[in-house]
Length: 197
Length: 221
Image: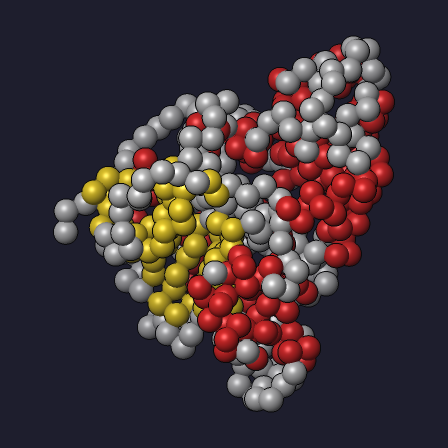
């Protein structure tokens, strides 16, 4: 594959169809500028600021744009809020739709056949594989991203964080919690499935 | 199309494999494949809907045995061939042998931040009003088009409830095949798991999809 992609790039650059410096700029954007830290800022602000949470609920695209996060694969956002009785989980069964503007590029497992096939049929089984066993009484809401709406899960604010700053709260927000395959961990613990680059 | 991409409800793929450390890219070529796909798309000769259809049109064995960046690369070759930007012998040799076609535009490095920050919004103005209101009961149509559709097989012919309205959006079924944007009212529709998967399904789960109005029929209460 390496030779195939290199050949493609060589041809397209030689024909003047792509600018190699633009390729570098795209890669740099997703390696260093756009990632789950963006989403964590949104969640932390929603936890800390009830007026912001209301705006996020009413018009997520506009509320997220307030923090400067806009654009590709985040053009039309919906925020779904977990509570004591409801847990949300996001998938794209047809391809790999994912809210890039707030979470960056999707992890391999999100784009994989096991996740895409089972998140709609056996979501509780999938969550258990992430170490998240929900009470059967909790409503599980799965969002299959079949259009250009992109879903961001707002996890529940962990107990024991009263008075915390937005920066400190943002450190608790894992990428998986914003997809729904995790929850925001209590202070001092770490959710096993969670990775925030 | 009923291709390998329509994975919802399929079985046999095993557990979800998480990765320790989870690198953003797994080889240098993946970065280039991502960037080439975006930069070539920015020439403006095909839509995201046509790209998705090119990916799902890979042979099912090829689709399921390819990584996602491999799928992107194979589909990008198809799109470049279809739109006359490369020739087959060029892909084989890695050498330019056919005079270049002039693209509508070339994405230069200084344009990247603005282009990515703008993205490609699909919301469109449309005269009239959507037919359904939040809370209305609807049933999805049964279709098996050879072309692109965003109505997954598991949600065809199923009864659900309108949960949100999103205004009018570009209709991928038309846009993917060069039929124009044909904006249509877009909704989020909620289905109980038991409606989708039968009596054995979890009574406390529901799945929502985003569905255009032309996918939906009125369902008597």
